[in-house]
Image (cartoon, helix red, strand yellow):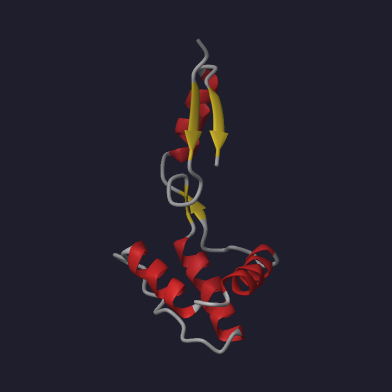
Length: 102
């Protein structure tokens, strides 16, 4: 039987919190909504998610479309692989394990 490992991308393989918050704040400003404090040290991501959900009630689809445009068209200079991820992926590939990212 062939082994398959499936990894979540965001928060598992890469740390993108700083860039995510940055682009959520840019989008919030475009909608004239309050922004989130950028201090992500010790951030409880659930608090951030609740803040965003509260701010965009009723405009979720429009907001997320704009967020996606802002995010995809800009460099994510604060997004990086977590330490050791590259080596783990390389080792799994060397073992012939099929890898997937979702």
